[in-house]
Length: 173
Ligand SMILES: [Fe+2]
Image (cartoon, rainbow, N blue to C red; front, side, top):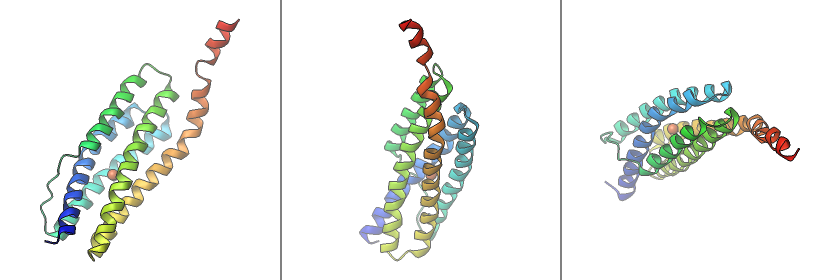
């Protein structure tokens, strides 16, 4: 097997692990989200992520490789931090807590966007058109999720910026 294909398969195993971790983590973020639109966004991406796992399995089949995940340490760290923010958010205002979830989720999406961009380009270079196309589909979904999270942020920021203001005024009086 050419070295580039070996490297591609290795990166795909990392992504398979990352997606598997997200299948478990995203419902937790959906449950914790208080803003209904944010909750819906997490639920939608949670379903999408299951499809992404299937897509990866399909890719392994095309490449004639076994779909064995290789523990993705980066995603372990990102999920861990996300769950930490989720826990801390329980003591905070809803909008502030939601912003924490958005921050964690966007870091996750950016990691995935980087990962899928890399494997898509490697697959193209190897002339694996079908594989590149499937990876591009997932990349699109990750980018859309990231954009949606960006769109959902302004009202949360607006609300969060007012939290604590009343108390400050009381102290000043
Ligand atoms: Fe994903």
